[in-house]
Image (cartoon, rainbow, N blue to C red; front, side, top):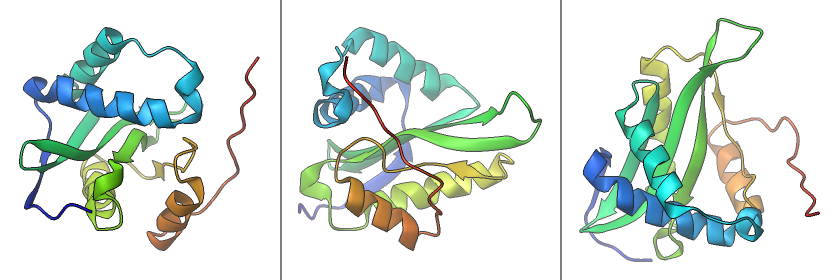
Length: 154
């Protein structure tokens, strides 16, 4: 694990490429790695999330290196007017795991969700990247499992 001074902050449009690079690394390790990764499309989506009031793109920087990030947003289910928050990506580079980077990213995301009026946070260890370890961490943070994610390549 690398020990440099870390800075947690919301991403700006200037960070979209770095966040996209991190998302590509996440993708290459996930069960979705068999699906193509369109870097330009993802970068546009990340920039849209950065500029959207209903989204949070939060990064942890160690110097100039993006050590980890969480991309989350708020939604309303089709059957409800209640606002909930969920994350699309919560990822920490392997060399920064084992410390507090992932925990701090999630805690800041929780604060943001609370501040924007979300009543619940939906998240999970569903990428196939250290699933058991991620699920255990979420349990320690107070999250309750509500099922499993399954997939089948065809």
